[in-house]
Image 1: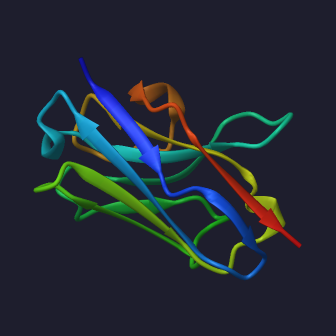
Image 2: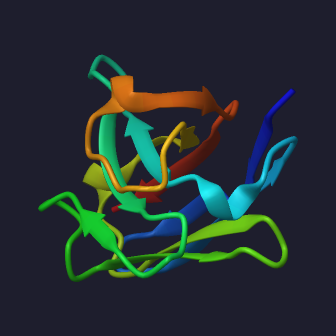
Length: 124
């Protein structure tokens, strides 16, 4: 059974930073690509960033490019999302997810396992 547990969300002022973490268990972590997604109230879930199994390849949504960095520590089965210069529009529940393949993907339906999410709220 694969488990993904997010942490690090919270309330931050606009312009601030947060670092989200996703702890994984139940499979060979380094074999699978991972992603961060978010869902704001009344909106569909959208991709934030994706990282390959090795961590070498990353992709970002245009809305966070230049402000966020996705990374992973395969030795600790953990993925991270460093978010800087946060804006009120970044307010959402952030989810981590795992694919069944090692390559990055910006498509939510290609992710097989999902965490429960962590709330990020950015005040203006």
